[in-house]
Image (cartoon, rainbow, N blue to C red; front, side):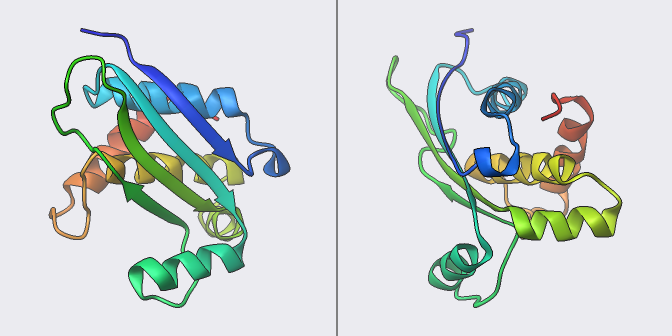
Length: 149
C-alpha cells in the first residue's frame, strides 16, 4: 500500500479561523479510510454566500445558497502508477455552516468538518441522492473516527 501524499490547496480558511494542517489531516484520514492510495490533489475553498449562490445557480440551476458543493475530477478511477489523482474541489459556504451549526447545537468548526467530509465523499463518487442512504451512513461512520478540525 502506497502512503497517501496530498497536494492540498485551501482558499479562504484564514478568515474563518480554520487550520489548513487540520484540514490536511482530515482529508488524508478520509482518503486512507476510503482506500485511496498514492498522490492526490485536492482543493478546498471557503466562500461567501454570494459566491456560493452564484456557483449553485450555474452548476445546479438552483438560485440559492447551499452549504457545500463538490466538483469531482478523477474520483477513484484507475490511474497509471505514480500519476497524481486529481480529486477535484470542495466549496463550503461558512455563513451557511454557521446557521446550520447554530440549529444543530454544534460549533461552526464541527459543522465545517461535516461539510468537508460530505464534499470529499462526493469527490470519491458517493451520491446520497441515488444511494438509498449509503453515503450518509458512511459519512456518519467517518465523522465518528476522523480527526477534529
